[in-house]
Image (tube, rainbow, N blue to C red; front, side, top):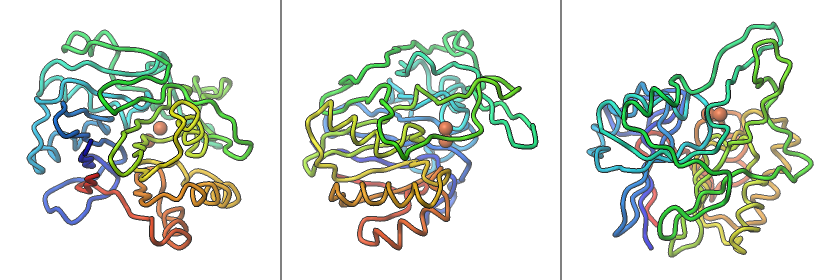
Length: 277
Ligand SMILES: [Fe+2]
Ligand SMILES: [Fe+2]
Protein backbone atom coordinates (compact mmCIF):
# COMPACT_ATOMS: atom_id res chain seq x y z
CA UNK A 1 0.00 0.00 0.00
CA UNK A 2 1.17 3.52 -0.71
CA UNK A 3 0.09 6.36 1.52
CA UNK A 4 0.48 10.12 1.67
CA UNK A 5 0.82 11.77 5.08
CA UNK A 6 0.43 15.56 5.19
CA UNK A 7 0.91 17.80 8.21
CA UNK A 8 -2.08 20.15 8.56
CA UNK A 9 -1.35 21.66 12.00
CA UNK A 10 1.98 22.14 13.67
CA UNK A 11 3.85 24.74 15.70
CA UNK A 12 5.60 26.15 12.66
CA UNK A 13 4.99 26.40 8.97
CA UNK A 14 7.01 25.26 6.00
CA UNK A 15 7.47 27.04 2.68
CA UNK A 16 3.81 26.84 1.60
CA UNK A 17 2.65 30.45 1.79
CA UNK A 18 -0.62 31.34 3.46
CA UNK A 19 -0.54 28.55 6.03
CA UNK A 20 -0.58 29.22 9.77
CA UNK A 21 1.17 27.66 12.77
CA UNK A 22 -0.16 26.98 16.26
CA UNK A 23 0.99 24.88 19.21
CA UNK A 24 -0.64 21.62 18.12
CA UNK A 25 -0.59 18.72 15.74
CA UNK A 26 -2.75 17.24 12.98
CA UNK A 27 -1.90 14.98 10.06
CA UNK A 28 -4.03 13.81 7.15
CA UNK A 29 -3.48 10.17 6.17
CA UNK A 30 -4.46 9.37 2.57
CA UNK A 31 -3.98 5.67 1.68
CA UNK A 32 -4.05 4.69 -1.98
CA UNK A 33 -7.46 3.25 -2.75
CA UNK A 34 -8.75 3.85 0.80
CA UNK A 35 -10.63 6.48 2.76
CA UNK A 36 -8.73 9.46 4.15
CA UNK A 37 -8.22 9.52 7.89
CA UNK A 38 -7.46 12.48 10.11
CA UNK A 39 -4.99 11.96 12.97
CA UNK A 40 -5.50 14.72 15.56
CA UNK A 41 -7.03 18.11 14.91
CA UNK A 42 -4.72 20.73 16.48
CA UNK A 43 -6.21 23.38 18.80
CA UNK A 44 -8.83 24.35 16.25
CA UNK A 45 -7.27 27.68 15.26
CA UNK A 46 -5.63 26.57 12.01
CA UNK A 47 -7.04 23.18 10.89
CA UNK A 48 -9.77 24.39 8.54
CA UNK A 49 -7.71 27.29 7.19
CA UNK A 50 -4.63 25.17 6.46
CA UNK A 51 -6.68 22.33 4.94
CA UNK A 52 -8.33 24.81 2.56
CA UNK A 53 -4.95 26.30 1.67
CA UNK A 54 -3.66 22.80 0.84
CA UNK A 55 -6.77 21.86 -1.16
CA UNK A 56 -7.67 19.12 1.32
CA UNK A 57 -11.42 18.58 1.61
CA UNK A 58 -12.07 17.49 5.20
CA UNK A 59 -15.73 16.74 4.44
CA UNK A 60 -14.36 13.59 2.74
CA UNK A 61 -12.88 12.46 6.08
CA UNK A 62 -15.30 10.22 7.95
CA UNK A 63 -13.00 9.00 10.74
CA UNK A 64 -10.77 10.95 13.08
CA UNK A 65 -8.20 9.46 15.45
CA UNK A 66 -7.43 11.42 18.62
CA UNK A 67 -3.96 10.54 19.92
CA UNK A 68 -4.80 11.80 23.44
CA UNK A 69 -7.11 14.21 25.19
CA UNK A 70 -5.06 17.40 25.17
CA UNK A 71 -6.45 20.65 23.75
CA UNK A 72 -3.66 20.96 21.18
CA UNK A 73 -4.65 17.64 19.55
CA UNK A 74 -8.41 17.52 20.06
CA UNK A 75 -9.42 21.20 20.17
CA UNK A 76 -10.10 21.14 16.42
CA UNK A 77 -12.88 18.56 16.75
CA UNK A 78 -15.60 21.14 17.35
CA UNK A 79 -14.82 23.43 14.38
CA UNK A 80 -14.29 20.33 12.22
CA UNK A 81 -17.72 18.92 13.09
CA UNK A 82 -19.38 22.31 12.67
CA UNK A 83 -17.96 22.86 9.20
CA UNK A 84 -17.39 19.39 7.76
CA UNK A 85 -20.22 17.25 9.16
CA UNK A 86 -20.48 14.10 11.26
CA UNK A 87 -17.37 12.07 12.06
CA UNK A 88 -16.52 8.86 13.86
CA UNK A 89 -13.92 9.57 16.55
CA UNK A 90 -11.48 6.83 17.57
CA UNK A 91 -9.93 7.35 20.99
CA UNK A 92 -8.91 5.81 24.33
CA UNK A 93 -11.36 5.64 27.29
CA UNK A 94 -9.36 8.29 29.21
CA UNK A 95 -9.57 10.86 26.44
CA UNK A 96 -12.02 13.13 28.34
CA UNK A 97 -10.04 13.00 31.61
CA UNK A 98 -9.67 16.44 33.26
CA UNK A 99 -6.12 17.67 32.76
CA UNK A 100 -3.98 20.57 33.96
CA UNK A 101 -0.44 21.77 33.63
CA UNK A 102 0.68 22.93 37.08
CA UNK A 103 3.85 24.99 37.17
CA UNK A 104 6.36 25.08 40.04
CA UNK A 105 4.92 28.48 40.93
CA UNK A 106 1.51 26.86 41.48
CA UNK A 107 0.01 28.42 38.36
CA UNK A 108 -2.53 26.04 36.83
CA UNK A 109 -3.62 25.85 33.20
CA UNK A 110 -6.40 23.57 31.91
CA UNK A 111 -5.21 21.45 28.99
CA UNK A 112 -8.15 19.02 28.54
CA UNK A 113 -10.30 18.80 25.41
CA UNK A 114 -12.20 22.12 25.37
CA UNK A 115 -15.56 20.46 24.55
CA UNK A 116 -17.50 17.75 26.36
CA UNK A 117 -18.35 14.39 24.82
CA UNK A 118 -22.05 15.36 24.87
CA UNK A 119 -21.35 18.63 23.08
CA UNK A 120 -19.38 16.86 20.36
CA UNK A 121 -22.03 14.14 20.01
CA UNK A 122 -24.69 16.84 19.54
CA UNK A 123 -22.60 18.08 16.60
CA UNK A 124 -22.52 14.63 14.97
CA UNK A 125 -19.58 12.86 16.62
CA UNK A 126 -19.87 9.13 17.31
CA UNK A 127 -17.18 7.65 19.51
CA UNK A 128 -15.35 4.37 18.97
CA UNK A 129 -13.47 3.96 22.24
CA UNK A 130 -10.84 1.30 22.96
CA UNK A 131 -7.53 0.96 24.79
CA UNK A 132 -6.41 -2.01 22.68
CA UNK A 133 -4.03 -2.27 19.73
CA UNK A 134 -6.36 -2.58 16.75
CA UNK A 135 -6.60 -2.51 12.97
CA UNK A 136 -8.71 0.46 11.91
CA UNK A 137 -8.35 0.21 8.12
CA UNK A 138 -6.45 -2.06 5.70
CA UNK A 139 -2.77 -1.69 6.64
CA UNK A 140 -3.47 0.93 9.33
CA UNK A 141 -3.35 0.25 13.07
CA UNK A 142 -3.79 2.18 16.30
CA UNK A 143 -1.41 1.29 19.12
CA UNK A 144 -3.96 1.73 21.92
CA UNK A 145 -2.48 2.23 25.38
CA UNK A 146 1.30 1.89 25.33
CA UNK A 147 2.98 -0.01 28.21
CA UNK A 148 5.73 2.06 29.83
CA UNK A 149 8.62 -0.40 29.95
CA UNK A 150 11.87 1.53 29.48
CA UNK A 151 13.59 2.78 32.63
CA UNK A 152 14.66 6.08 31.09
CA UNK A 153 11.44 7.42 29.58
CA UNK A 154 10.12 9.09 32.69
CA UNK A 155 7.16 10.94 31.24
CA UNK A 156 6.20 14.58 31.54
CA UNK A 157 6.51 16.32 34.91
CA UNK A 158 3.89 18.93 35.70
CA UNK A 159 0.81 17.21 34.24
CA UNK A 160 -1.99 16.59 36.73
CA UNK A 161 -5.64 15.55 36.84
CA UNK A 162 -6.33 18.33 39.35
CA UNK A 163 -5.30 21.95 39.74
CA UNK A 164 -3.84 21.31 43.20
CA UNK A 165 -1.23 19.05 41.63
CA UNK A 166 -2.14 16.07 43.81
CA UNK A 167 -2.91 13.45 41.15
CA UNK A 168 -0.27 13.10 38.40
CA UNK A 169 -1.57 12.50 34.89
CA UNK A 170 0.60 10.02 33.02
CA UNK A 171 -1.60 10.46 29.93
CA UNK A 172 -2.53 6.76 29.64
CA UNK A 173 -4.57 7.55 26.53
CA UNK A 174 -1.51 8.50 24.49
CA UNK A 175 -1.46 6.40 21.33
CA UNK A 176 0.10 6.46 17.89
CA UNK A 177 -0.81 5.34 14.40
CA UNK A 178 0.99 2.58 12.49
CA UNK A 179 0.86 2.44 8.70
CA UNK A 180 2.12 -0.54 6.71
CA UNK A 181 3.76 0.94 3.63
CA UNK A 182 5.66 -0.76 0.84
CA UNK A 183 8.88 0.62 2.39
CA UNK A 184 8.18 -0.55 5.93
CA UNK A 185 6.17 0.69 8.89
CA UNK A 186 5.44 4.38 9.33
CA UNK A 187 4.67 5.59 12.85
CA UNK A 188 2.66 8.78 13.25
CA UNK A 189 2.98 10.22 16.77
CA UNK A 190 0.75 12.83 18.40
CA UNK A 191 2.66 13.96 21.50
CA UNK A 192 4.10 10.54 22.37
CA UNK A 193 3.79 11.08 26.12
CA UNK A 194 4.26 7.30 26.38
CA UNK A 195 7.82 7.63 25.06
CA UNK A 196 8.96 7.00 21.53
CA UNK A 197 11.02 3.94 22.49
CA UNK A 198 8.14 2.47 24.52
CA UNK A 199 5.90 3.06 21.51
CA UNK A 200 8.32 1.38 19.08
CA UNK A 201 8.65 -1.55 21.50
CA UNK A 202 4.86 -1.92 21.76
CA UNK A 203 4.48 -1.84 17.97
CA UNK A 204 7.20 -4.51 17.67
CA UNK A 205 5.43 -6.69 20.25
CA UNK A 206 2.03 -6.36 18.58
CA UNK A 207 3.13 -6.67 14.94
CA UNK A 208 6.33 -8.72 15.20
CA UNK A 209 8.00 -6.04 13.08
CA UNK A 210 10.80 -3.58 13.76
CA UNK A 211 11.32 -2.46 10.14
CA UNK A 212 10.27 1.10 10.79
CA UNK A 213 10.81 3.24 7.72
CA UNK A 214 9.72 6.57 9.18
CA UNK A 215 8.61 8.21 12.40
CA UNK A 216 6.58 11.40 11.99
CA UNK A 217 5.14 13.76 14.56
CA UNK A 218 5.51 14.91 18.14
CA UNK A 219 8.21 12.94 19.94
CA UNK A 220 8.00 14.79 23.28
CA UNK A 221 11.80 14.72 23.35
CA UNK A 222 11.73 18.46 24.02
CA UNK A 223 10.47 17.75 27.54
CA UNK A 224 13.17 15.36 28.71
CA UNK A 225 16.74 15.56 30.05
CA UNK A 226 19.77 15.47 27.77
CA UNK A 227 20.58 12.06 29.28
CA UNK A 228 17.16 10.69 28.34
CA UNK A 229 17.38 12.22 24.89
CA UNK A 230 20.78 10.56 24.41
CA UNK A 231 19.38 7.15 25.35
CA UNK A 232 16.40 7.62 23.03
CA UNK A 233 18.74 8.50 20.14
CA UNK A 234 20.76 5.31 20.76
CA UNK A 235 17.57 3.24 20.49
CA UNK A 236 16.27 5.13 17.45
CA UNK A 237 19.56 4.57 15.63
CA UNK A 238 19.32 0.81 16.25
CA UNK A 239 16.06 0.75 14.28
CA UNK A 240 17.71 1.80 11.06
CA UNK A 241 15.03 4.41 10.39
CA UNK A 242 15.15 6.19 7.06
CA UNK A 243 13.24 9.29 8.19
CA UNK A 244 12.68 10.94 11.53
CA UNK A 245 10.33 13.79 10.70
CA UNK A 246 9.99 15.37 14.12
CA UNK A 247 7.36 17.94 15.01
CA UNK A 248 5.48 19.79 17.69
CA UNK A 249 6.71 18.83 21.20
CA UNK A 250 10.16 17.87 19.91
CA UNK A 251 11.12 21.52 20.24
CA UNK A 252 14.10 23.44 18.92
CA UNK A 253 16.86 22.17 21.23
CA UNK A 254 16.04 18.47 20.84
CA UNK A 255 15.55 18.96 17.10
CA UNK A 256 18.99 20.55 16.86
CA UNK A 257 20.59 17.59 18.63
CA UNK A 258 18.63 15.06 16.55
CA UNK A 259 19.69 16.89 13.41
CA UNK A 260 23.32 16.76 14.51
CA UNK A 261 23.31 13.11 15.64
CA UNK A 262 20.98 11.68 12.98
CA UNK A 263 21.72 14.01 10.05
CA UNK A 264 20.62 11.62 7.30
CA UNK A 265 17.31 10.76 8.94
CA UNK A 266 16.22 13.99 10.60
CA UNK A 267 13.71 16.36 9.02
CA UNK A 268 11.29 18.90 10.48
CA UNK A 269 7.67 18.07 9.77
CA UNK A 270 6.10 21.52 9.70
CA UNK A 271 2.71 22.53 8.30
CA UNK A 272 2.72 21.52 4.65
CA UNK A 273 5.25 18.68 5.08
CA UNK A 274 4.19 15.65 3.11
CA UNK A 275 5.55 12.12 2.97
CA UNK A 276 4.56 9.65 0.28
CA UNK A 277 5.57 6.04 0.78
FE1 LIG B 1 0.87 18.14 22.17
FE1 LIG C 1 0.01 16.26 24.86
